[in-house]
Length: 368
Image 1: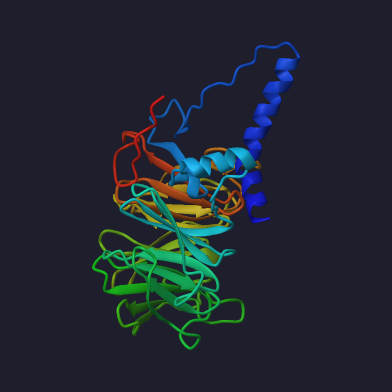
Image 2 (image 1 turned 120 degrees about the vertical axis):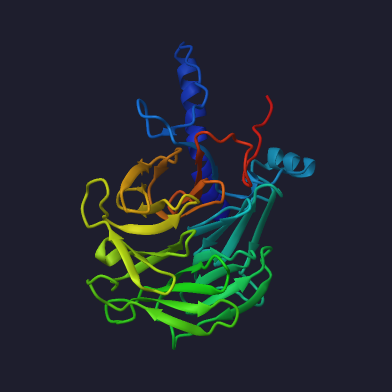
């Protein structure tokens, strides 16, 4: 079932296209497949700012098959050694290494783009995860993973070796996300709470010792309070952005946890939120908010003013199309990584003026 699900999601559109071409050929037409043109955002006549680059779904997207594996795949029809995402939730990126939490596989998947590696960790041995959900990376490239079921934060090195963990049910009710300060000293963990819980808050931990430094916020509709906070991000000034999903807004705090700014409200218009789920801050301190109801992400400046949006809902797995979007992040070079749980993919969009081979995650296009 694991491979069947992956193959259907990944190859069904291709099979459909091939079948259509065969039918058309049989009818005497000369229909030809048009070359793929990557969508750009925003669409003309506005000046483009981002372009779709690629999707990450499994090991074949980063790792080249050996001659033996290619032969076996040709003989059996099944991609040899192929591993795929099942139900990704969140994503974090550092220096071209894309880390994805998979709630069904109970693991973290590493797409090492430059190194052409696909690594799965956290699913066995010390540091084994029960339900990995939120993820963040420190400046020293330690990987922090929130385990919702275990009510803890697991820490691994950049290659997936378990280092330590902190947090407990005495401190956390329903931990969902984590972000690390720019100096690596603090880990901010979102505790979303629940209907019967008063723990709707952010806990500031010492990232090395796991000691609680400060509790930020409480259950409230007032400024600085939270109602089912979901995700968190930190900008270049160490300001803390919290996606306060139950209040349909983004709230910003100082590094010390003092309320600073809020924007957004419930609605169906641009700049509003319906079911906000993921948040990220880019290198220019623009704020990216994923909304699973709109099936897109909106981009705001650091004053909360809407700049643009990317994506739309579809039942077809195509570039820029989402069905059940979740986490989002932006790397050092401005590439955007957006998770879709239904299509089991990470969509990558790069700044329009950047070449495909530029940056940490850049890969030169294959020669024809």
